[in-house]
Image 1: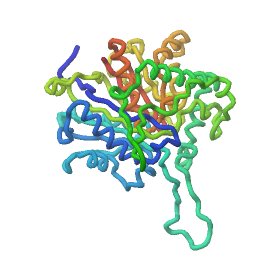
Image 2: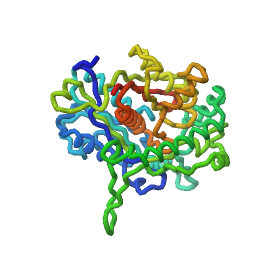
Image 3: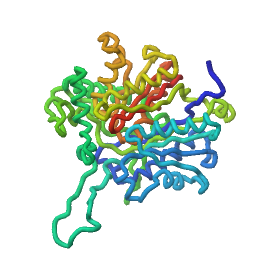
Image 4: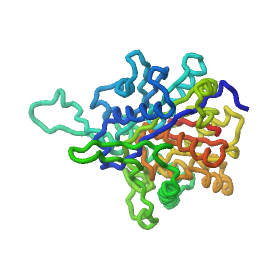
Length: 406
């Protein structure tokens, strides 16, 4: 039953997600953030001074460090927010933009805020190499450079590379390399189909990114750049595993991308006052964490925790979005949610990532959680409504999940 105190999603937008060597690689993540901040407000006629708080997720500090720090503060000021505006820059790895939304919901429920924006922005291809010790380097001798994107792990502090943990745990759950490759191929084919059917388009989920050129009209990027409709199992099988993982390859992992996403939430009462039709009601928004090794199980655990807050069951979910940090994540997590029931697992997989996922669309890490949320809301609406769950894993087995009703 609807309540005027319900928290509702009223606006959601993202840029296209890039391939590694895209022209988007030179746009600072702060500028990508500025783009979606402007657009998500314009779509519902809000002004910067009406937004009580902006929570801004970004989890590659080496990239935004090129512009120093506080990326959320910089992006909001560039987008025309007054100096008195409140923003928070946060890093909860890939969970960040859903964490940003959840923190805003807390503020609304506490009566401190009325309208909150959650943003996630990342430009992974722009991440520079690091030269530790260079400030105090001796006059003679070689300097060592570190690539923060290499391994995509936490080995400097003794933790495993994410690809190793995910691949090993996938095998523990009976998820083979072939099954992961099959899921990757499915992701590309479903994403291509979604585009062909007009499900992913500018004006709904997407906004275009315009890149000025010295001569001629600006270059316009208006679609995700990494979809490979003609991917085959034979091609995927030829790829070598990466970083010592037993199953993870470049083919069953997402591309390294640039992109930004933004959401606006408020109470139903506030939306009614402004004449805004909600995209979805946020039934629950939760965080979770597990032992660092079990990063590919945490989406399931996050969904289970969210369901426990609602009294709903996984069978009540008409659709599921689980971010494809690797193909292992949706496969392991849906198997856990199915409680190892083969028939139920098949049905859950059919309802999961029905328009493809990050393996095809891209995974600019800080912005992906907001992306799966808006993707879920739009697809539920196209299907006439219902319940849906979206979940994402983040580095060292952090999790975030949201239950939506449309």
